[in-house]
Length: 133
Image 1 (cartoon, one colour):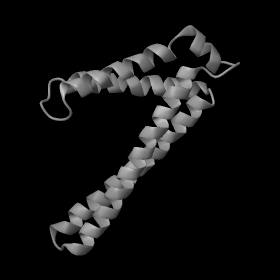
Image 2 (cartoon, rainbow, N blue to C red; image 1 turned 30 degrees about the horizontal axis):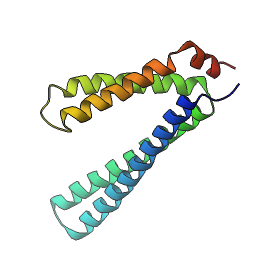
Image 3 (cartoon, one colour; image 1 turned 30 degrees about the vertical axis):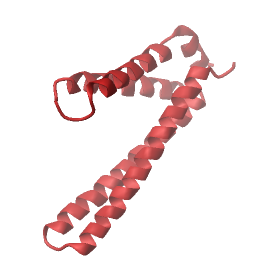
């Protein structure tokens, strides 16, 4: 069975997101280490938090890349995880409409639409069949 184009697009989006998570995590970890070396006192605490946060983001990026690979390989678990992550994204985006912080209304609507399309697309019967070889 041929891999659906929409699944490839979603997998590529996951890989792009993983790339940026890992880059940002690496920058945060290195910046936290430099911050610790330069400052004393509270600088150690803040730098340590930067290092831990950076390592967390790198690990999260690896996990997201793994889900993208699972989608590309048409693994059922990856489809379920992608639907769950998109649903969580929908919930957090709806909650963000209450908060004045973060990206503007246009960015929130775009994020809501993308997550909604991912849930809808990966739930389609013909797409689900591709994952159940």
